[in-house]
Image (cartoon, rainbow, N blue to C red):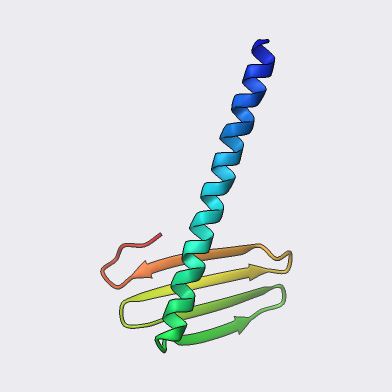
Length: 84
């Protein structure tokens, strides 16, 4: 009985953590889209296996890295020094 309860609790915990991570990614995508709509400067750099995208406006800077495997990493920095 303890194993069943433990497995259920771990499943719930895992589903919450995955959902939370997905929400953060969607939020960052929204920030990038809004910046582009407002006329932010977009720079794209491609190496052998990676693509780097930099979106920058007067308030914040977003760096996006895409690997060959399709892994995407976002980094958001504001001009006052704080970031995600």
